[in-house]
Image 1 (cartoon, helix red, strand yellow):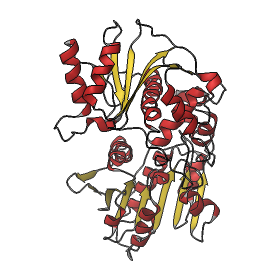
Image 2 (cartoon, one colour; image 1 turned 180 degrees about the vertical axis):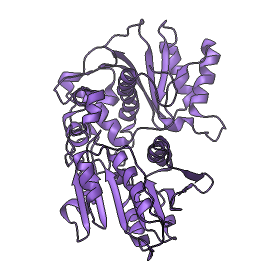
Image 3 (spheres, one colour; image 1 turned 30 degrees about the vertical axis):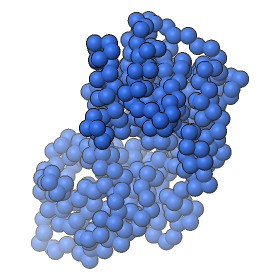
Image 4 (cartoon, helix red, strand yellow; image 1 turned 135 degrees about the vertical axis):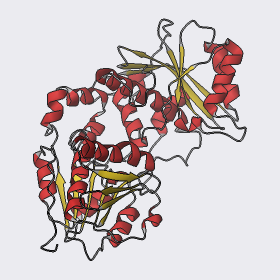
Length: 437
């Protein structure tokens, strides 16, 4: 910087944790922050972005996330909250999704990185990526190539993530890292601020997660999560027992929309969403949403219990007929019962990893508690639990048998809903404004 330029100082309310301090202090050209849930990854990412934007006065930086919804709802939201709460002046061009800091004239590009070939272009002084383990390696490599601003004061590429097995991130930052790379690994329960507000945060997760998922997500360990059976906690002798409907409680109908087979499960929750009873399944060949809804209502519409609809968020997308799957369900309900159903499907699905982890946790939690009962009539769901496995690539094998995975997917949406409701009831609200329950 020239000697006549005014130095700008901004005070930010930020008390970094030990791991966050090490991350910010690192002078590595490429650095990462690996940590479990609640370790302050988002805060570290955004604080580092602001720091580099002030150091590299007038230069371009990029803040990215795996998808646009993740970028908008998590990454950008966290950055704006820090800027607003600390009264840091900025302008946001929503059309181009570019933020300009008024103090330094530095600009921050906000970009999803799922289509990484679009990342070619402007030279960057820095870039930061959220949830790197959900990002393709190609996106990181494209951004490495853009880190070449000759006027930058400090060139830096950085990222934060939760471990996701022995993937490319693990190899690049931990086992096969080259000169210029450094990773900081946060410890579980390090976040004292979180524990002050919610002392039982990690203990509650131990009840909700299966043992392997708990070790990865809460303890931040690197594990081979893609070995053998997908639903490794299932035991026919333990989980398959006769179940009965309690008409005093809501009936949940969870759908995985498919033409062949069209799959759904009927479940009820007990003990404040703690236990899942899988009462029935629908496994229909060459069927439609309309036919499946009529069959469901023939069997369960006559009961006095309240019916609630769950399932795949893709059912909100219009089909060739012009109607969405949930729109079709609502229409059939209106025709048959004279009332519209309560549809609780969120705007987007949980990740496959989270959904599978949720189901395994109900089959047996990290504390060894069994929290799921499956009626013997659910024969196809049992086949899913016993037969669905991983490919060598680590992806779920959906090709060996086209009839598999659909019922366990449908159940996964219901179980994820139960875990989400438990958490939101403790917090006291839903982030999307929808009905809890």
